[in-house]
Amino acid sequence: MLLSQVRTTSGDVRVIAREGTEAYEVRGAASVHELALAAARSGEKIAERVGRLGLGPAVDLASAYDEGRMLPPIHHADPAHLHLTGTGLTHLGSAATRDAMHQKAVEDDGKLTDSMRMFRMGVDGGKPGSGGPGVQPEWFYKGNGTMVAAPGAPLVSPSFADDGGEEPEIAGIYVIGDDGTAFRVGFALGNEFSDHVMEKVNYLYLAHSKLRPASFGPEILVGDLPADIRGVSRIRRGGETVFEKPFLSGEANMSHSIANLEHHHFKYALFRQPGDIHVHMFGTATLSFADGLRVEPGDLFEIEAGPFGLPLRNPLAVASEPARGSRVAVAVL
Image (cartoon, rainbow, N blue to C red; front, side):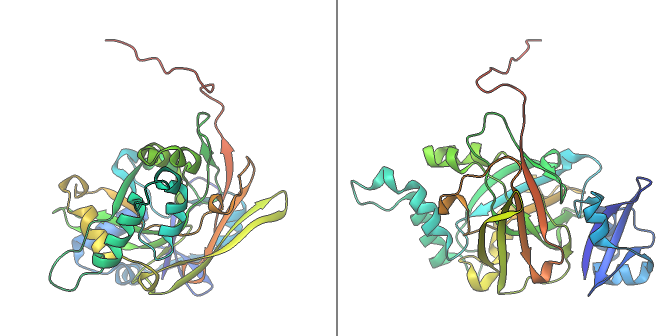
């Protein structure tokens, strides 16, 4: 089952369930967030709750997308209670890309970069058996719900950014139940938009480089993540495809298990606050930046993979305020 959210022409939110090519409104569901929390409280699976609520009118999702009515597939009424986070160096091809970005600083002494050491730690201990958690991954914070761009909406790079590049990956979608239990809603395509030029200056700028918008969806795949995911990342410019490359995900292509990544995120009580939403990006190994492409305002990012329904599309835009180089004033109370 695939879940999404659209806005009607009158401005109301509708939850949409899809099996195959047919999509329908879910009766009595005000939002995917509400639907998921209700399922958690009743002990039902989401698909079971959707089946019990029943389906309403058919919906043309492609038309809603073209008309700009596609919403993020989950949202919180208070955006401060949606958390955007992620893990890096989790995929079997990810080390080479990151290592190349940071290699220059250690070329002379022949030592491994921190990126390569972190990657090797994951290969050796990121998929533990049943005895307990494995090695913790790299982790980063991207922002809250104010940083979410809906499918089709621009990913807006700040005016002070050095770059704004795509990162095609899979995101886990979670809600926190009343007792602090983390419940996985499902998985979605994600564009973990980042500033790779800034990151390349110094690895310690990684935290700065990640404080950028992100987009995910348009649909949530309810259920288990396929072990072997094969998708495509594209960049279109003025009707021409200037970048196209496959990306791999799923545990068959990862150095960490999904369960290990989930454990090391939700082990913090901070991330188990009742009612909160978490969108956690699982990492990528495919970047147009690594292939030497510099993106430009107006470029259209497109990420697709069969099991996840509609492709995720977002154009690149650059904020005009504040002016580059200007200082943000802080008032004294």
